[in-house]
Length: 299
Figure (cartoon, rainbow, N blue to C red):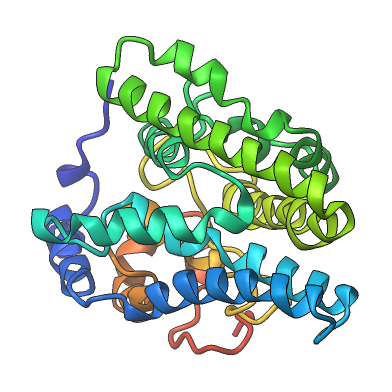
């Protein structure tokens, strides 16, 4: 039986009031995400001629390419939720453009990630329907790394079968498969022409980016959590500055209100903190009253 969210806590922290607060932070156009998404893709593309013509050494190109791959998912993630268009049909092309371009460095099709991510939100921590279940409920970070490297963390074909009755899911998934095959064809071509450069500028950085993304987007935010709107994602702490791990300590508010822009989450959480504590969000009591761009620490 579902929980009556409206009557679960006092009127002071009603669901309607919570939504009203969240709505204030779901308006601004996220130019920062577009800059990061398109910017990292352009930087990555520029590495190829820079390395080929000996302007920078290959090892330096590898480091920069790996950084680009680690920065590539978040801008696409915002596009997956339509957070650039904000429901305006005339601006949906921005979601598609940023979503596709930023994922080139990860060698992943936008449409497959979009529809499987929507199912992750709909069925978070459900062992049979959550596409992120294996990694978000892994026993250790080491297991997550191994699953990310061998490909078992993204067994999306399984979910194509599970959601076979969802026509929209199937249509988007099939579109993504075509992009995936195009990626593979291009990858095979450049491997043939430039084997070492392809290894160190694309294939290996993409692997590193997938490991990074899986750890910080899937594993850490969901450790020890349960099924339920206010129970399936947690506040956690980490030694890294937030701009290095994409502020995934705050990922729980994204699960509660996905339309809040990523760079507006800190201010939203400051105002929502009493609601989060009242609702029993895991770790909510440890959220600082003020959230800065320094590492989040217990204060």
